[in-house]
Length: 239
Length: 242
Image (cartoon, rainbow over all chains, first blue to last red; front, side, top):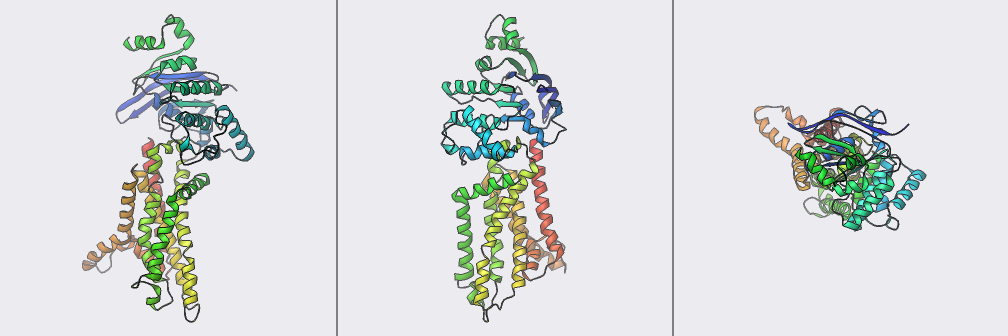
């Protein structure tokens, strides 16, 4: 069965403020979706809801299973990298991967295999016995991605994965996301439209908790005659 | 739940923090029980650990909040609590793992005071002339008392991202429940011969154990406190997730 994610009339209230107002979209396996919007548009809220970190109204179906009504094991289908990539910095890298793997039900040989795979894929070879606090920002970010990926989730959710990285590290993380996206659904948010342009094949523009555009990048470029994403975003916002 | 338990235990002893706690605990206890002239057991004249069981709740009033203060508040402050919440583990298991780990550390501290008992046993004249049943009972009461203090500590740790505030609040609350209620009861007793609020005091129930009285209501009281503050922690964290 093909993996898919259906978001149906998703709403979120913070007090009286509507952070999300009945947004709906579907994503299928192999798609990399970029969530774009100004600060406070609802990007992080959407990603947190999809990672079951917040209560919500509406429904989210992961390959037919409701996020609201399923038991906790549905979280195994999701890999989440938080915006500031918090880590247990006193742990060694391999210990941290063990912890996240264990929490996702990986043990013994299976854990060892997955650990070796993500270490290799994320370019962390040689750093296994280093304390996390001694890693550079770029390697910490790779580790965050590795943890989101260690249990082989159906959906990878990455909240601003390149924030605070230098240009070389940004390119490395982009390549890593592309590499890991095979047979998965990847959703990530970014302020940098150039990043969306580089990685995604689909984009959703959010403004004030509503979707103002949901399109494949290819169609968008065709429609706006190869304008930059910044220009397209400005045009849509101002209309 | 055991994954969280193991993580927390490792966290205590991977840093200097856990060892400092252990050293401080044994230093203060040993000084009071064996060395200070006014309190040491040699002056007491009887083969008993009364001095230890009298003083140790006051030491735990500081040790337990110090153990629990960073349990949740630090994770919330650093954002790592979000990592745990995004994993396939329930909030109940996260909190229970944390409670159990700090209770286990407290239990270890209590456990390693057994040499006191053995020493008193051998120092008695004739050897073994002590009421071991009272000591066992007192240890049981102490373990339940520190369990309650841990549950309170975890709750206050969940309230704030500020560890110092968590420490102060839980130390104060533990003191209030141990001795504060007794103080109120003292004024209350001027007007009423039998005070109702006395039954909410930690010391009232704990001292029952140290007198060798194993009362079911004292046992249930401590269990209720543990469950109550555990539930309040869950309630508070769930409210935040909403």
